[in-house]
Length: 387
Image (cartoon, rainbow, N blue to C red):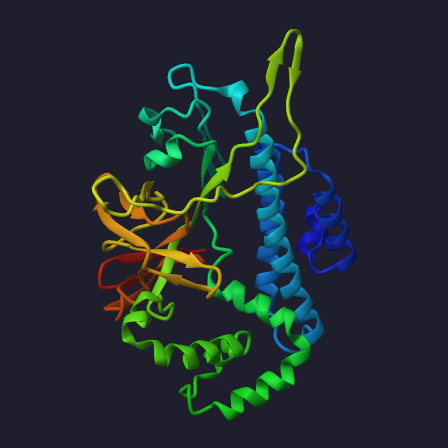
């Protein structure tokens, strides 16, 4: 009803025809710039938010199991489509990078952002090793490349999304939506292996039902690998990403336009956005040539202790702490610098329980139909105004 009254032209995410039409039409439009994609991306994020709210808020008798599975599929399809459009828009910008080169360095750099996303893009047009580092002043992010990359036709993109479409919850939903036909088999496997997992409460059980197969596989596979390997894998029951996700990529720089007499000529390649095939070699002093990254911490997040830097492992569908080195945290400047053996998607994690146990709570009236709810935790006091 709220969606109907808003009358804003956006599709109703619970109506399959509207969602499918929206996605089909957007897939066909490949000439959008980053600004337009970000504007439409806000519509997509609102659709995802509505679907997630329905899945969390609706009781079992309000939506059917088929609807629940369909909503999960829509969420994953919208997330994938949004990232695909980010890549297409990035490619469109890189194709005309030479038209926006910096007068001082001869390279191209830009920052484009809104409340949900920040794009930081740098194109290595001149391939001069003295310009192997750059700081995006408007965002506070920066990098320092190995010499081999500074001499290559490469672009660097730091894409900061203030939401998290990466963590294993999304991965488990994807697995669930792709394996709905195997539901009974999964439940049987759960019963057979019930001795592996402690019996959870009903709330946790609802979460695990989406990812039972993955959880069991991880439990079964991690035992032989030993404690050392287990320490590298982030336990999301203990640590949680805060401040969004940073997609840090090295990209192939597409052919640039060349001026020939009164003509502008460019080679057109029938490929999408390509990752630059970077494999770290040995630096001159014999150590591994790492990429150094500096990230400005989001103003909307409070880190009560040094955040844990973790990289996303798409093969294992998990956050890992290996591959990250030389971490320097500047609390006053709200920045963190670290080295990476390759280009990764990273997140900053914090202990999910650092403010527990709560010390006290208080609810007091502040006026007619108004109140102030105060919770005193270990590091913070939170006040929630109720009207």
